[in-house]
Length: 620
Image 1 (cartoon, rainbow, N blue to C red):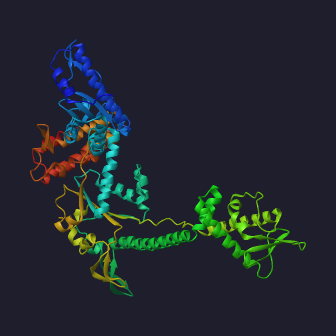
Image 2: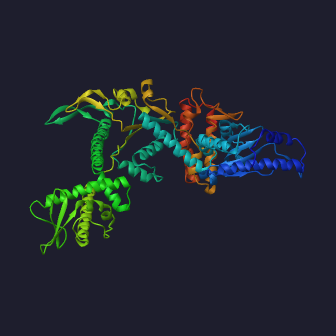
Image 3: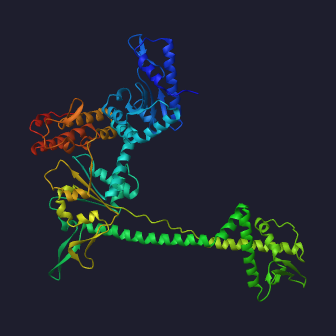
């Protein structure tokens, strides 16, 4: 039995790192490494991969060694092993104690995401009175707790699979928030992909997946009645968006009438579907209830089918079914011998049944007849169901040939009755109706005066399903407006544009705001490295970024080029400005997209005049 890592082991690691190497100390430290490896083996039984350093020595000059002051093992999530191996891992370390944390490896070790991950995940594990099983459980809990952090920081380090998973997690988080809040605004500086993200969210909600081919996505969304996109502008009004009065010419005379516009027309589609869904739910549950009742009322037939199919049944159920079927069979005979006899084969019939439930069996072609007690038949119910028609002791005056014919008829009666009843119990084929989601994307939502455009809808947004009164009355509908719970609104907002409509607190309370910020990782992922294009795009991204922030003591601070009224995350140019398929295209973006907006920033007071020289110096 291997003893768990103890305080004495930790003291040896700390103390031996200061002493000369000798074989005895080397072997003692190797034993501690074996304990750590045994712990990793236990953890790997739960699917994790690991790599462990097995040599307690480290280089200390040419031809010289000294003992490591820190022993560690790298643990990897199984789905991230290939992409994160020797880059980023969960660490089990033994130094001043036993710790779990997340850390970059080799060239990733001192990068900011690695340091942040280590600090945030650092977990001390007590060694005293512990064992391998308990610490294995502690590690599983640690891995579950910090998996999202691992993926997030791995994405920031540029690890491909972490980037992919982080996008999925972020998208799921946004969708969960949207489903809870019903309306969100994606906010960020220009070029961060806010509308791009909004369309991804819409496609995911409507179709359950996101197309990598954006032409396919465009076709999907534009052909769906569940999707619509509108762009606001400064002159947009309530009458344009919700409901207003229009003038129509009729027989040379002007006629004024109230008309529903974009929002109400789309809302009506979602409301009509909601009502259809509610009716469908009622019908679904009605059929389910009918089916359930039929099952309950026909349990004996279902049990009989099971007995026939499985060729087995418990003793109490056999007694119950024998009683049930003999009573049904007697009723069948009585009903069919009122006005004659009941033919049970080509040459045998049941002539009559008496009060003591004895039966007269008669040959059809002569007057020969014999009697049999119904008790014989009841006792043979199991044989009938199992198809065992072997000769048995029979009470009464009947030959085996006649009784066997009766048995075969009795089994055929049971089988046919069971099949008829079971076939009549039809499980509802209709699937439970699904409530469809209807999505409106309002691009540049802050370019209009939002309070004026929404009017009384501000209340309806929060209290879904409740009625509000419009300022305009529509013939046949009155003033009532309802926003159903299956309508979702995704707004996009450029945080650099302060010349447009203000979003007041009442509206802010009803929307959730989500930052969509510039990301170098998108450039890393999208731009090809052919002819060094990706490197040039990232370099340009960094140069432009210096206009907005700078590092002081390894911390990001606002640049001296940036006006104090603005923060970098509000105005820094987004990654889409740097996505190019060739160097010529990147040059064109620099001259005709990047520089013009930067000069506009100077004109608007976002960047100071001192930035002009740096903007002019921007090159690939």
